[in-house]
Image 1 (cartoon, rainbow, N blue to C red):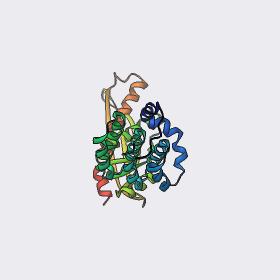
Image 2 (image 1 turned 90 degrees about the horizontal axis):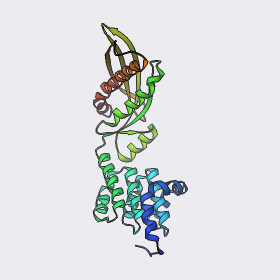
Image 3 (image 1 turned 180 degrees about the vertical axis):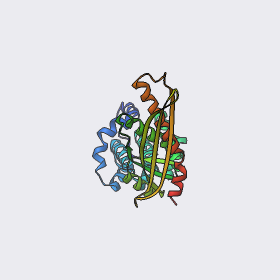
Image 4 (image 1 turned 45 degrees about the vertical axis):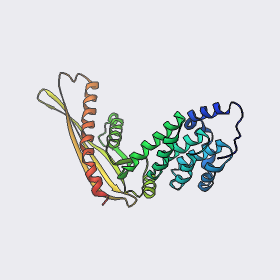
Length: 277
């Protein structure tokens, strides 16, 4: 593909770089190339003489999630240098465009370097998941309105984990990222606000009960129009004898919140589907 500029021992260096391509090279080189024009990065990833420039260009394109670079990165999967091939595969996985699956599958079948093949297989797995994505959801506001500050972190982590389990739903870090990805991939996009609205303790005979209520507000973005509200509630019970102190009561609160979130999220897919129409 290009003139071989390697010196004795270079093959060992290349293998080492393949192993740490996402760690060392991303940290050292990607910030420099990220500021460059995307068109220049696409040229560099296939034609720069220095393999390190080709690697950093691939990683920068992946960091940008630059869909138009899929063609150049697919070409880079045929590069003579394993580090470049691994970086190209990682970038294609980060971009998330399923159109790269054909090139990745061909590259995987021809790849002889185990570490590079692993990078390619990871990208294929990511794109297969993206291929099945039906809607991109931005997890926006997570509000704890109960006045119990200690339960806030539990509420936030449970909402995130429950949403991540939903098939066909891709969770985005921000509304702007969700809108951009949805535009590039021609997918509908929504924003979700989650509220923990109630957390109360009561006694029922010999039992202690904690009740929790959750609301999920679904907005269509970028229009910001409210499309649906999904509610969930749950009650956690334990015998008064087993709730001896604050730690046991805190555990009961967590159980109630987890169950209430699960109850609300269970109804979310139907609401998401209706909101995208």
